[in-house]
Length: 351
Image 1: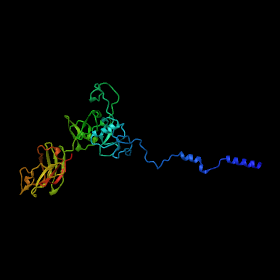
Image 2: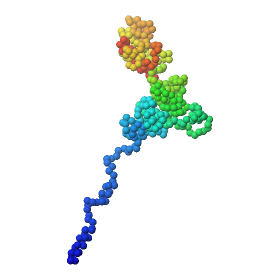
Image 3: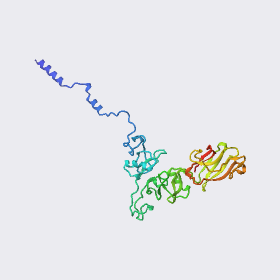
Image 4: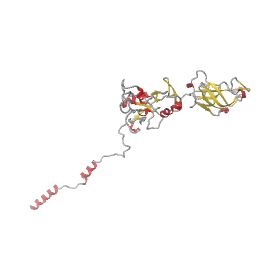
């Protein structure tokens, strides 16, 4: 009986003792559960911005639309934003609305963080506050004689001649003037093209698209259409039948022809010097000279090489543009065989 009781007690003690079960290692399971599954190796850090047009960004891939780019202009205290291309300022008003800024705080211009020739909608600083009717004249920045009112408003890059702008206040002691394309630039008075060097440099306009021209009764540096102007020239390289010349647009609406070579007695075609808009053709060509052909050694009245029986060897002479022919109607000059309209040599006028 004692033996039975002892055996029974031993069984109860063994049953109460915990058994080792390697499949239920709570410590290991708890450690695994606390480790996050990161998945594949992470890429570039998320900018924390991004999205549609005008959204804040740090890189192009932050922008939902692949055609949008993460851009910023040359202005202080502005943000990188997803931007779209533009041609006119009006195309950026939706950009301004989406960004919660006014139309005066956006421009259509080249970005500062991208090498490109395309224009984009760019955020700019807000214009200075209106000083009110007693704030002084626009000429002194609205300060008048009220003493020192603190530091002047910093309009950023718009203070330089040739900088893009939306209002006169962004142009220190200058005016914000629209150019041929409608884009506005801070301009300065001028008397000649040499006064517009800084304007041209800052605006990134070449000599063909900038000039000292009249605007509202004053000569200022301004963006212009790329049409020939007084002082522009063209070099007609040696072409068919060895013709060649150098031609300059003069102040009396004429063409000054220099080093002209043409053997006018060798060819049966009518031959003219003239101008055209775009590549020379019989339809676009406007003759400026008389027919330079000589028949049997006899040249027509006014032929520049009549004394040499029509053989022009580095001849110099002047031609007048036809009455009513505007500079906008042509961009090049040529020596042309007619009536076929074949350009023996042609060249574009350049500054």
